[in-house]
Length: 114
Image (tube, rainbow, N blue to C red; front, side):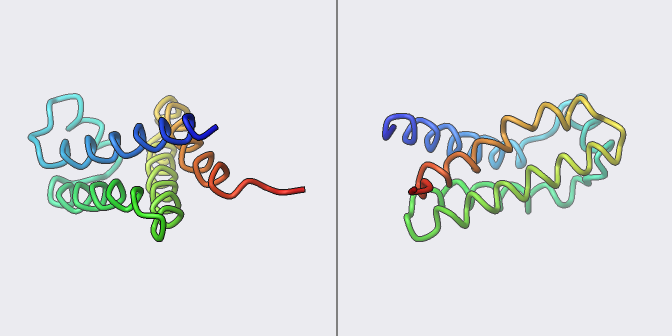
């Protein structure tokens, strides 16, 4: 169980760092189209990048572990809502596994005890 938790933690942190770093890189045509469909402008991308990197860093500290997973969940739900608003159901469905990951990590840290 601990190995699974560590793997999930590393994957989640890697994805946060990768998305944060990618926010500072010039967007290719497909990414630019996706951002415009979602209503995300180029000027807010650096803020999303910094926020994503901070979430990734917060995962490694026990005091901020749950908060970072909650923030990660909020960001994913926001992306899903923007995708549904744009009529892109495929993108919203694609985000479901990524939505489950922080919730499973919280559950693994605080399992229900009967």
